[in-house]
Image (tube, rainbow, N blue to C red; front, side, top):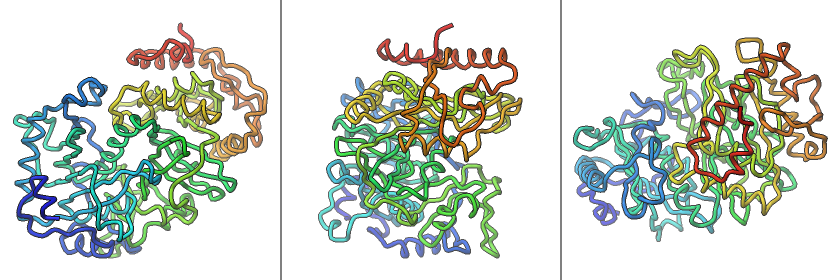
Length: 524
């Protein structure tokens, strides 16, 4: 391993710990003061200043390989090769005479598209994190392990913005030519996980595989459902079905073979976690799990999941086999249904709509949800949020690259695509609207998965052009057509038009065929 590290520029480390067991990584973390154990045996760490991803600090090296292919802009910011190399050199100098923890693992449960990843960590707890998040090779497979990509995470190293041309002391730097990722200044382990996802979003389209920011589950007959959605839309909750096997909760690929999980672990948000509402996650927080920024009583070691004094973005990392009904290995057949989840706080989108091919591409590219008033300082009314392809921070290529892959596999599989609103009906949030009950949403999801919803009659919404079912098993009342649920029909019409304008204004930045643009809300 020392020779491999020397090739990367890392010379004279104090000690190199290679592919340690979970127990040894926990022991090192405790001995180094990186965290403490909870009463359930989970390792609890504090990530300091950075308690979430830092998208303004992510850069891609602009060179011959990326110059004409990457969708440069606010999300994909360029850094020169010279700056990257200078930071790399100083990180390597920083790591001299320090302990290093190395994990060799796989991303991608399908061996045909699996990639070898080596992660070099300054912190034992971050090495534990990535060991639990990725797919762990059998011991005999490690003897001849050759990494395709290397990630060096040195959270104790701070960049100098005026020298390095970074935005702050933190930096997430990807060099797709050298196949090297540098992470500096941030102790938030999610940066490592999402760097791996960014790598797959760069590699797989060239292999005709659709990389997806979604969860996936599978029924007893092998039928697969995909769930796309931004934070707060119910992606994790709705895919965690006790009657179906969980393939994965966050990142997948769709190939001609079917669907495969990228990861071997889960990274669940756990603010207000309760045993009653999310028993599978609750039971997974045992020895071998890692908790970030969850408040803990240092004497009793009890966890307070309701305390958001450190951050609202508290997280739990654990291997997927901690979930009783996990599908291992994380592979499934070709999906039969695809669900786009949105929590529409304006209360104008229908609880469910069946999408045409072009509509699926439009709403996939849009990646819409809405934040609630009061969730962030200064927000007094619902705010529309659009994240390209439900994963803007991790997509190096233009949106149409990923949308075309969605269309390709929709065409080949015949999968039905639905837009499901888990937000409000009857009015906006905080102004007459009510949140759609989880019971009703689960009834809708069940009808989608069982294909019952494909057989009912539909009517078309005049503003969004969406096909709304006239009935749905388990749903009573007038919530299916949202206009019928509003007392003030004129107010509904006005809010629907306003949201349609937001959609169209957001979509102006995309260079896509006209038929996709025409599949969106009608122009005013």
